[in-house]
Length: 119
Image (cartoon, rainbow, N blue to C red; front, side, top):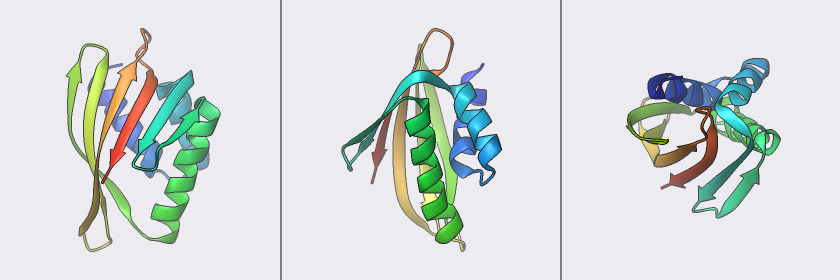
């Protein structure tokens, strides 16, 4: 899978409200034993199941209940890693949050470690 495809699927996993589609995406892009470290909350989610549950929680709280949207920004690939940027926007397009994620990939091209920096 190319970095561009991985990034598209990654953002789609966070943005979709279709739980079956989200599950398919998470299964395809995250290694089974992946870890997700989120700052500034300083929390870690371990394994595909916990990561999917967190994505679902964030999706429900931010997209479904609050009416917000995620917008992908630029990404950069470097060997087995991808750095990407994103924003959270209100329905009128106002940016209320920004973030940068670092994805470390396993030899199969799946996310093995996710470092998320919100702020």
